Length: 266
Image 1 (tube, rainbow, N blue to C red):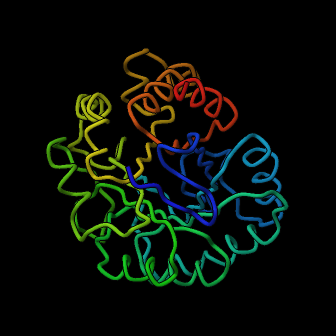
Image 2 (image 1 turned 30 degrees about the vertical axis):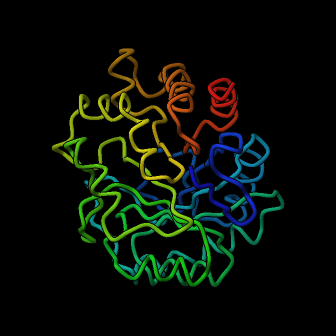
């Protein structure tokens, strides 16, 4: 398994599981506690609720993945980037800052202004994204998605996820994400459960694995819980994911997820 250096943070089999906390500067995002449009308040949240609680990486989203909203253009994402940059400049804690985007123009601007890595939710659908990440020598998370910049999606057939992650290649610092959750209307809870069951298979790509399973529907359906009561099942799944080879856990519940991940790594 090839390890990845993300701005000095080692990710891979030789390192402890890494926790990716989430900050959104998009008012459309569904998880309200993580949403900010004021850089000062956002920086306080990052320091106190993410970094102090154990986040190694802070992933900053500029738009919601909710299919009810129109997809932002690269220009519209760039308009929101100032808030994100002011936030990371105002934080006092030590973390790797990731920009979530599908556009190479946004990634390049963010990297030039202080971000450390990229979270590409369209899986290199923008063919210039790998070039930008190589030129800046940064880690990049690549989500399994159809090759369409118009709308982030997910691969419904689990057997096609490996192909999607391989499409347009991998950089030396790529982290792969098999994509759990409601990115696609055609993807079922059973599809997510199968992906989770087969998580080890993606180690064949010889890159670290990221999973974003926090309070996801496929877990809530197993336990019969609403979102606000789904933390226990998320933590159980976190331990299982790490046991099955996951290296980065993306979450809104940083402290609890960190503990569960460490249990899974023992």
